[in-house]
Length: 275
Length: 292
Image 1 (cartoon, each protein chain N blue to C red):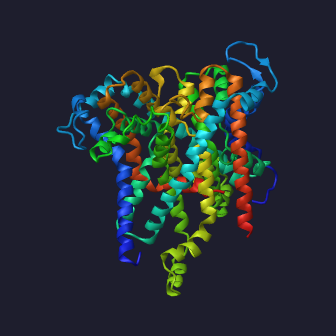
Image 2: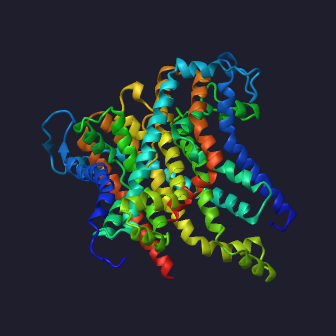
Image 3: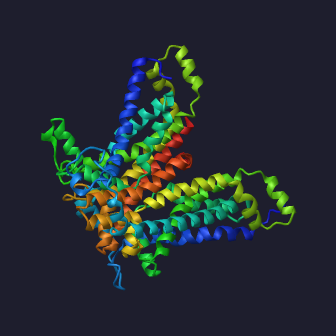
């Protein structure tokens, strides 16, 4: 506890100001999304005179947020599933199986965590074009999966290493194959790490923009972050609908965050304190 | 298990990761270097080899590229100082133990989990010259002469983006710093208090030295993250007005969108090397810190 009373009061004032500054833009966004267009420019109060939900209906249907939202759900689920599957297979083998050159393989696979690789989106664009994956859903998903692998392998390998050897040995005596051990014994034991990875990647893929910008051209395939920019470009004056769209894009992330806060914080600190 | 022979079965487990990594990370990485020596529009079947011309043009003939670097460096400097000091102050207060600390921790980490696009567009509207709430507040409290179109004024645009970047980023430094602070045993503070050290002295002689490695991690992550800023700039100004908020990634993207792929990759190489040397310097210094 802070001893002096003066310091304690100023500490609370600082915290309160910081909290208000954090929340105000969000409250402003939600409040504007509930005002009709004429009220948006005249009523500066955070509380709308009456709740005007039509903005949401218009953004969802006319503004095509329905399409963007559904696309984002598909991209996020497929990518997160791919990340969990590939990085748990790899992390398990590197931690528990006698894979040749496993230390070298591990070091190479986690390079993206250590070395910044900016601008590789340019050759990535060329590559996808050559493979015929430009402007396809699968192209974007593959890039998202690849983006999550390094951290996934890094985190899961360290979790698999902590599991006691005896469990595995008993299963081997019973004649289980490596894959059965991985799937039936090891995976359930690292469930907390899988949950952290799933939540962490869900938020970052939901929010991703640059790759979606480069890879996709067809508006019907766009995820929600690109959808927002599309809407912003064509309905520049429809502030109420725009703010409703932003709220729709933000709500899933906020809900996941409030329910799964610990997993997100763990992901952040595990990522940062890795060095 | 006593067998020590290599388990080829294990390679099957590793294979999907290796294939993905080779195609989507290694290949583009190598290709970046190769393409940077060519002039290519991405469409024509012929790539024209031009040696170091792209590099020469960037280094000696492209002031806007260096302006973009400088702009990102200015935002980075502000994030390193202002943003991280605010994060540290808040983390220290929460670590001391206050009521409602769970509430504050939850709130401070909301901006970092939002998308750059959403944040950029909300703030773009807050900053709007005609309808923005910021100008409305300034007029209301009698500071009308300071109102401006924040993002279209070349004098204020970069600074305005930096403010949003720091708003979005401080909670993230806060979480890492708080995790670091919480590893410091509370007994250290208690015995120092018995010896008559006040809060400030405790911070200087206990907290700061023990937190040095964490400060370092936060600093390097701030540098690497901020130098690569894109979403906020793209959604707020797209690098305008007149290049006032251009940053390296928006600039590289413009050349990609313009089908000048050789030049774009050469910029990516130069930018990557600069970031790479920064992180190498960080690793060397943090090794030295660990030894002492």
